Image 1 (cartoon, rainbow, N blue to C red):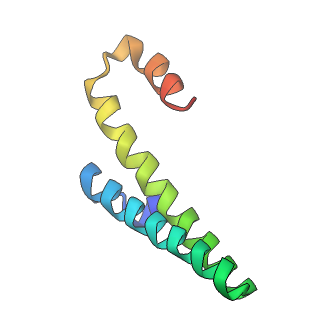
Image 2 (cartoon, rainbow, N blue to C red):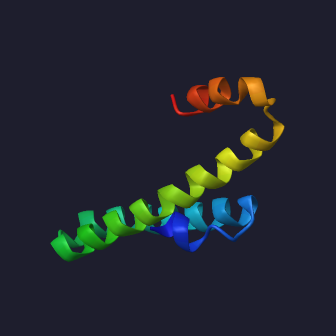
Amino acid sequence: MSQILLKRQTASRMIVIGNSLMVVGVFGIVLTLYTQSLFVLILTTAFIGLGHGPSYAGSLIPINHVSPNDKRANNISCFMR
C-alpha cells in the first residue's frame, strides 16, 4: 500500500521514508518489550510493513536504470536473494 502512495516520489525519497518507518518500528519493538502491550506490537508491525515496501522499491529503481535490458531480469533476481 505504501508503494502505491509513494510511487510519484524519487527513489532516494522512497528509501528515506521507508527506512524512517522501519526505524520507528524498531523503537516500537523495544517499547513493546518494555510495556508488553499487544497494541504497540501490532502498531510496530504496521510501521515495519509500511516501511519495507518503499525501501525495497526505492532501492530497486536505480538497479533497473543501470542494468542493460538483456541482463535486467538476472540483476533483479540476484537483488531479491
